[in-house]
Image (cartoon, rainbow, N blue to C red; front, side, top):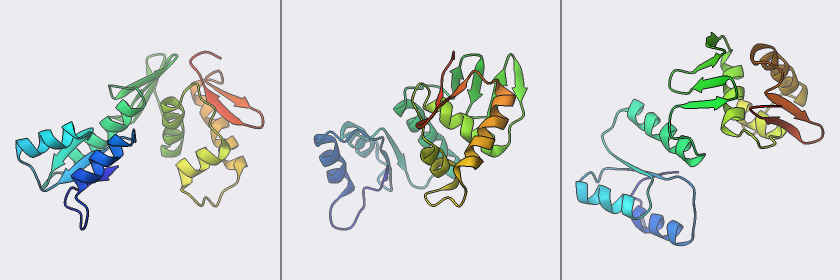
Length: 173
């Protein structure tokens, strides 16, 4: 969640405190014109995961959002591993057996999603929505074909099919 503190009606800091009081655990980045150090401390103490004052550079906002997302799924660094695969989210690169793999942007997004959700069954619908948005105009076969191409590049043992459920990425099959 990206939350501005200067909202009309109810102040963003009040909303933040209510969410955290109600045990809402999703990651929150405060993005606001209030940049004094005391306001930043107050925002983080109220439950924000990060705080960015305006004006800001888009690259900094994106880097902070990526860091919050990584931490929310248990990854502290830009690197994620899955067995002999290493994914560098900062450089959008995948390394297998010490060499860089050449993946298409869609293959990279698919592998990245699997690696961020490893050891969990991921459905066709979830993958289609992640890759193509909420109303994808492709069918389940599109995902199956893409996974087939990805398996050829990374090795078939990393992504297993769970018939009737979807797919699961594991370090060892």
